[in-house]
Image (cartoon, rainbow, N blue to C red; front, side, top):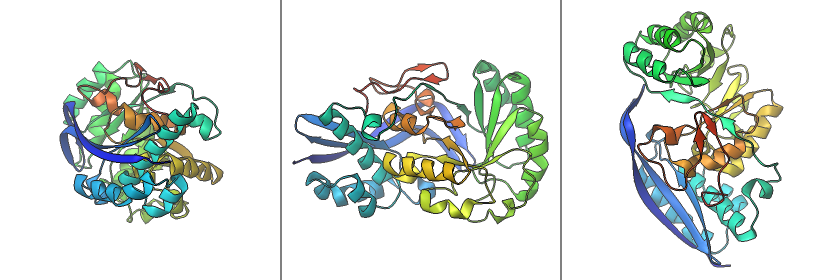
Length: 328
């Protein structure tokens, strides 16, 4: 079976400026892989992330380095050995799933031996800003069941959460420090956050410098993001984290994401499924992984000025499984 493999870059403007502790952006630059043949084509999207040393050029080069092998029939298992976990492998892996689904007439979850996915409830993310600004944004989104709050470790995070809780008192909150805190800040904030509706704190300490989490009183559960990439990283997380955040751009695709989920659950970790800022094409495979997850963060398209068509259907914070025309 011959398959052509093409790579393209796309820019998707955001609704406004989106800030985290490491910087700000006004658009999402993604890479789309298309695998075509036998009158069908499969698509996959990834977001090169500078935090992991990725650029648009480096990810494109990785994809192109195996394009010939993919065109000559390399399957998903072969891909796991050909490329390391990361954005490039994710785009190819998801395109392979989509290609096979369209070729066989079966949905991706059927190919994976999984039941049909149900709708999931996603968090809605508030980028880090001045406390008053985040408070007003929380008020505008007070009807959402869960808000995810980007923090920065600049000394204003407690004020931010207090104002957000005041303006959205019935909304559950999850906090993402993006590696921006110290152990002392976690110990200071966690007990107070627990009283303000915070149910989880994501990656408070820098990856590789998170030994300080061992032995801390878990007033609020702690979730690994930057410290967790694929199933091989799980052993080092024991005793530090209560949850892991599965992102397909970290695992290198749906194939490894499903394996990571299963192994994490067997080891006693709770699971969160997250995303980078991308379109519905990037979110769709995540819905397969997100079934039964404690926290779902697949709100990328809600942050865009415009999504691709057809996109995922968002009913407030409820996300419907993908239509076959989108993916899988």
